[in-house]
Length: 316
Image (cartoon, rainbow, N blue to C red; front, side, top):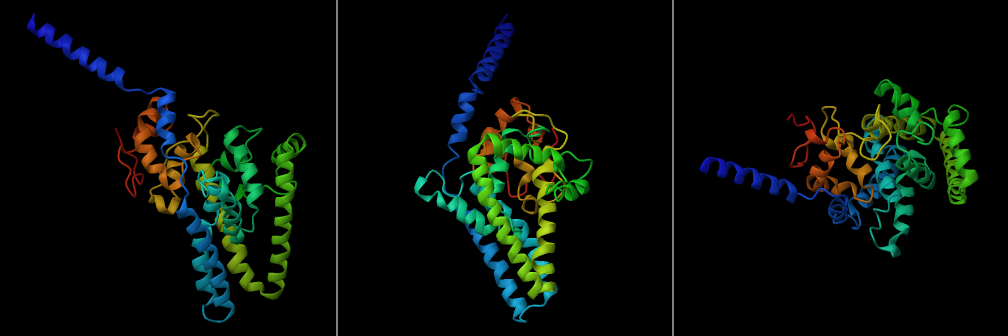
């Protein structure tokens, strides 16, 4: 009789403990909001410093202070960091909740993109469409280079999105430009920026052909391929549409630094307003919600996010 009472009491305590864990959407949003709103100074520093380094290497190579092969080797790595600050600006992380600093999102984002010769505004409006329609073949601008058979195919496909080479993407852009005035205006302004970069590259190639090839064109091409693989292919490939199903936690054996922490990109798609550098702590706090909602790979991430938690996903 006593043993039965003890067993009943134990079951009651376990049941009360389970009930006390609040996994409601309201609780999830309350926790998530605690990680939002700050100025992501790390991305401002990365954006400006990598661009300053890009100009500095150009100057040293042209002045004969650095061999071309060394400048090429350095930029092959650093140019891969040119997109991250723009991405942060696209989501308003550079100004945080300070409306008077909103200009930082555009200007730091655009300056950071100089090595990639890209328009911050075009990348912003298309990236926000990606968030709204992730993995939708008819509405996700990144679909073609995301859902390929391999990372190598993705690295090539990301370059085949201009002119008439991607009819589906062209149809998306035309539809949005016709139906959304703000999208059209941003695209037109961004088009002028792209035209300016086009002219600059022609002038640079005429005057400094080898330097333009090895310090601008090749690092830019490599970076775009790299970004297409780790930002799109690895987190989203072969996944369906749906907020808690369209992005996975993943690993390729490299430490997070060399993947720009894209192994934990699922956190970004869950709450895009959380800064990139705050995502590890947010994951620790929101991990039970992620597991409960079935985000791919969430049940295998460590409970404690360290500098390199996802070289090997935890096996449970």
